[in-house]
Length: 134
Figure 1 (spheres, rainbow, N blue to C red):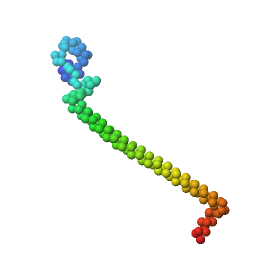
Figure 2 (tube, rainbow, N blue to C red):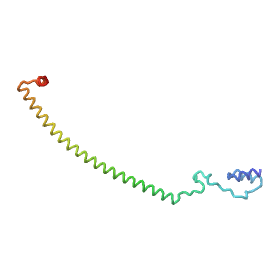
Figure 3 (spheres, helix red, strand yellow):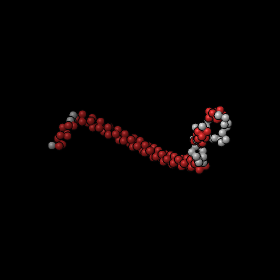
Figure 4 (cartoon, one colour):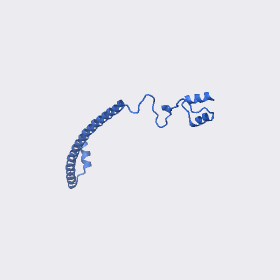
């Protein structure tokens, strides 16, 4: 039974019931101190040989954030430039539209005048077109 207890103690799984069994057997407290391994702690799982936060990882994270901010700033500048270009193009198109509306109104006015002349002279536009082609 003593060899079983030593094997269990060497596996770092010593518990209070095992100590109670040893006291009942009259052997007393074990002479070796049993401590938990890092992997047995359920609250903190830290791989052996690694610290919580090394300075190099902090600087790497800061550099990564700085690069990300620079990328965002350059993208923002490009978007602002594109917005300005689109706004100027929009104003140009609005000016062209107003010019085209004016031209359209002039054409409609001349069309009405021509229609009035055709009605006044009692001229059929369909007959004029057919006579021009023959």
